[in-house]
Image (cartoon, rainbow, N blue to C red; front, side):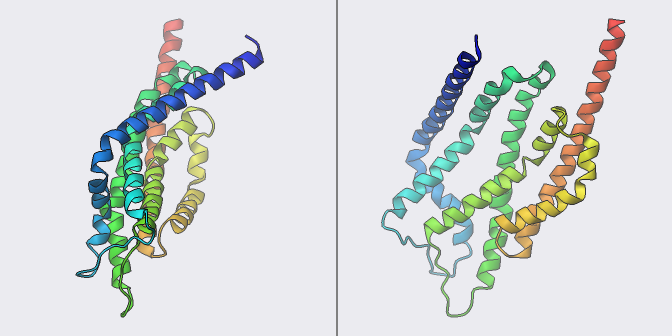
Length: 250
């Protein structure tokens, strides 16, 4: 197979993998569609809990009451279908991996999904109530806190993605070290830059209050350390296996 044929075959496989991922996403979406309003109500609960008595959320755009619950359900569908989507990504790149790297695929898929969900739950259960309480407490007199549902969705989606991806930090560290892209020692030396970067990221993706920024920056830092710890364990395990193979070969 020449280079052109190989490139085309990779494109065809990529297309097939994307179609399978999108198909799984749409399947989950159609299953959850019936409960779209209930899913949005659940998402809006942290904000509604902080609204003044008698106040409600509003919809500025005419079609927002329909489209916003649909968007929320689509995001929920993505979370549910995430393991399958990640598997399609790994299945596409797996042929280019070594045997010892392929062994990490299933654990990484499972761990990536769990960490993303934990990040979203952390945002929903801890960050949202904290942020919305802070905003409500500082609302000036004479100003009624009535949030538009589209603006609210855009805000919480940003935080979900920020915390979900931030909680993937250990996975990123493990992949970088196991692939030999960066050594553990180099990552340890880069710790001060990572800490500064964590606070910069938190300042960009969270509201301008200190509490929510700390709630994102500190988990990134802690999870970075967790990634280094796990990478160290995997490196020692790999070293023992290589030593065992050398002894058996002799």
